[in-house]
Image (cartoon, rainbow, N blue to C red; front, side):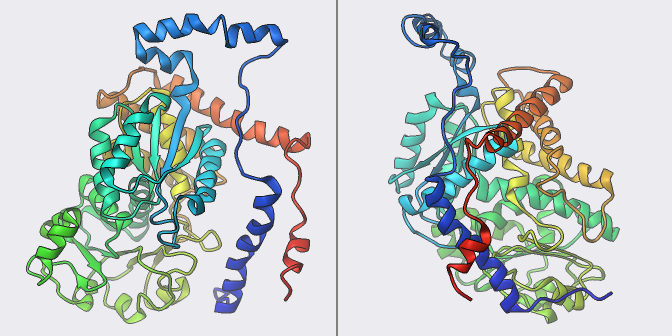
Length: 460
């Protein structure tokens, strides 16, 4: 049977469905997350333990040793999802209030997939130093910080500096989260096509936060920098490109990669694609952004990751017609979805369980290895190179990998065995999922209006 090729109209209609439901469901629930008790309240007498006068005893312990806050409070499991709203999804600079639904959604994924108590925190601190000062101010409340939807190059500087200044894990999902999942998928894709990733030529189409950090992580994982070619809106990055000095001033992180990569000094897109083994595209929605004739210039059995949403840079069937053997996208309705939600809930689960002081790129690689191994053991092939979000069993394994790497690198405050880490992660994640299920069954989370009713209100 030939692969079904839905029309653009069909795909756009499907892509519009979640947006239409969101407009009805968001105000119905008046938000997606809430604060719930986790301690017993057998009677009001228990408040004497949890609040005054009993709580003073814990306060005194923490005053003598502030790190006891990780044991006497839920700080160990609190994560702040921080954004200034300057680069929200594909919507651009829409401001903090408009970014709040996204940060709430992130908090929901944190809880359901990783058992992490995450709080959306949108801010008006736009200057890098303002945001860094804010992070320093709120640090005593949290076990970790998730930076989200911050424009570049500010996001690079804030991440880099915050990792130096704070004694809790700081992570930028658009960078490290994407890099983790890309690395995992690419590792297995190369196994499917029978090539060595460390010997391959890899083209990155787009040079934003996601692709830059993905390239950095791949280099750290052993891919020679010279084998990588970065492409921005003006073409490949190469050392003597006329605008290099301007890039150096505006985006030193991009400039640094330009100086390390593209050993063949490719100056056109065609030269970049010629003989490439893999393409990682994270640029702008397609189709037609990546051309079939470029794919035809690639090596035998090429790998194509076309991850723009809602429409990939090239349709999967077009990439395959041009010779691609493995194709991944950012969408759930095509095989091989490259989705950050496979990474951040589990990685934070792991580093929070050992009270880690930071998240390193090595932890991302360890988590990516766990993701890849899970899929490989199930049986990888052209249409299955990475787990799906509903394979929840992968999250505890990924959490253990991140936690063990934290211990190995000497940044964990709490040392646990592999078995202890796994059991803890399984219990916390399962409890979060079961609690949600129970609240739905009891009607404490009410059912939303029927989808058909909502969709009909928009007309044909």
